[in-house]
Length: 541
Image (cartoon, rainbow, N blue to C red; front, side, top):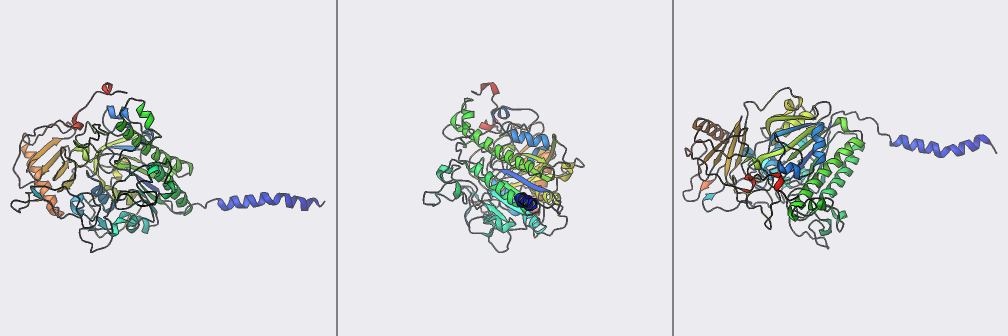
């Protein structure tokens, strides 16, 4: 036999395998800008984690298990005073537009075109706010016209992915779909701000013949129907598939991993539920703890993907929640509380800290010093200029003014943009649940001081946040000079951005602005669920 010919035949498969391997080797990416993952959780309170964002651990930090949040914090920077709006849509619209809630006027949650979601009042006529949300085109009534930062990222060369909850615009409006706001990929994002079911066994809120049982039914996860795959896990699997594809495109990517968790319903994630039952927790609380750990596992899976794919050194990961935990007085279900925010007061929908202070972490290898903590404050609209700066998008035009201020100096520890800066909130609406701080309010945070103004009563409450994180001691009567100064600054700002306010039904006259009301009275304190701090050793586990 001809030896040369035999060798050629024998080595041919090896040569083909080597050629195939070479074909699979990805060329080096020419655009070296960092990938960005924004991991947004829904309704997650400041205390719904084993990672303490306070000066000490609390019973809640002992209760929940979030090892991947702890992992992210060891690798990055924790923010102890990160703020959002107290309701989902206002936060998400500020994120996408870079504008303060008082300016964009999406001041409550959105769902149906042309319909408000406000609770009714016998006393107040609520304003015509932008209940259709935001969008990228002019002319839609009750809609804020804006340029999304995601569109700017896309235009600059980023591959943009949306996975999970959107809640930017009402049904049948352009802002309903993330694809209209700069995202190239949309996984399940639609108009609804909640979900019908987390359970694959329930088809995530669809009947066997495919009909949605409510507007909250999650679209686009049909392949998991009839399985035991929890919605949080299904979204994570789909996000990782999108990342696998993104890696093939040779572009930097932006992933908005926007979970429906930990929003109600509190369905049982059986991957973790039994663990918390064995601790002696009631069913509802064990289910909520499992929801939290399922969210944390998703974070870990994404961090693992980044590590395994050699992208860790060039990927920024940001963790944030859209509002405080669902913890107001009427958030009891079947006599059980599934979440509390103590030492913060109240929860979702409230102007108190429990409604607006969020858990936030940023990891950026080579830029953010690992295992650090930042106590300076920032607000959700600050993400807009910060993310664009991270992506090195230096020059851009928007149709709206940008209220956000980049927190890059906080990340690099080169400055503090929070100094001498005021934060503002406006909620001239009635959200839903009853509870402390819920109702038509406007708020200002200025240094250590925070003033809340209640439109209906004209009452003002003043707190020194560093010394009174639970907002139990109203100082408006004892510090009238500070109350007057902050009232003036808050009223001036709301007029400047054309903020809205309710009117009195009896007279048709608008409620006074905070600097027009002189009513100051000591606060009669209410003992609420989130006010109660129970020693850890009294919890039955």
